Length: 388
Ligand code: NIG
Ligand code: FE
Image 1 (cartoon, rainbow, N blue to C red):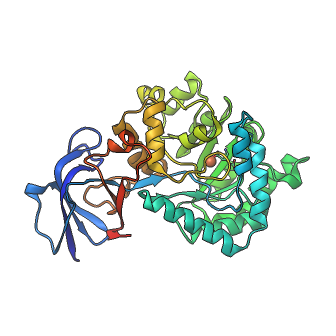
Image 2: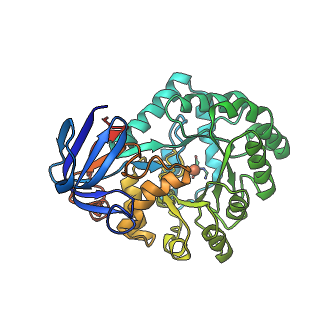
């Protein structure tokens, strides 16, 4: 197989502490060898082996491609008015999801697919090489299955979120909607999905309903993740830990017991600062989670209601400025943390055997992602060993 040597990297984040300094496994004056789709070697340029082709990084930083483990890209329509109203003081409410459900049901397959492709391309330009995405704006058997079929045409990390809110048709009979989500809808959706998710929150699903949804999904072979503790305190985080969910997402309102539970589990706390930005809510306390020993991931939550950004660099900057993370911690959480939230070991690091997913930054180091917020620093992006 052909090999490519990337040399003259000012600083390389490997996320392999045995390969370089600190938890990021940082190597200065570094090089990488890519063989096919994988990393074959990483270290200092002076020690690099020969390869068939040579690429000069021209003194830029190289990081693993971002792993965005939480987004809602299968949707139609726009909620500019709702955003405007919030910025004039109105609170965010889960009920706004209905606006997008109506628009999504009315859209063609082609329009939905084009939307997914558009936001994936937008994310890729900003360094995201793995993107999870969810259903949740269909809320009928046909519309949820269609959303997942379309999502699966674009990414392997697909999540069934029939339990986003109770479908409007079932407003008077939520139990019947839970029965649908855990029965016929699950049967139709499971073939397209790897994950099952539920919005466990006031105005969406309570702890018992969320448990029923996740348990049914697991019985069908799906792995659990949970929208937990976003708008208020609640049972979501504890449920995620109890059911060994890969991730509890949002984690904005946490008791000490919630933090302890996360710290003593393999459930990742996925923080979504774009949502707090766009809903003017309190920031999740990443420092508290990290100090307790929890694994933290950062993701965009890209959706038209609560967080309409596809930009992982933007989320990193917010996490550093407002959530108590260091630039190193935020970079780790946006790459290796996202991989952990997807229970993946082949991505999120640049070490032999890992997939060669990487971003070149027009900067000397990854710290600039927070130090120079809003500046398009992601230059080239490579996925599976190829420039994209
Ligand atoms: O993760 N919280 C639930 N779902 C999305 C918001 C969806 C919407 O408002 O359309 C979220 O923030
Ligand atoms: Fe979400």
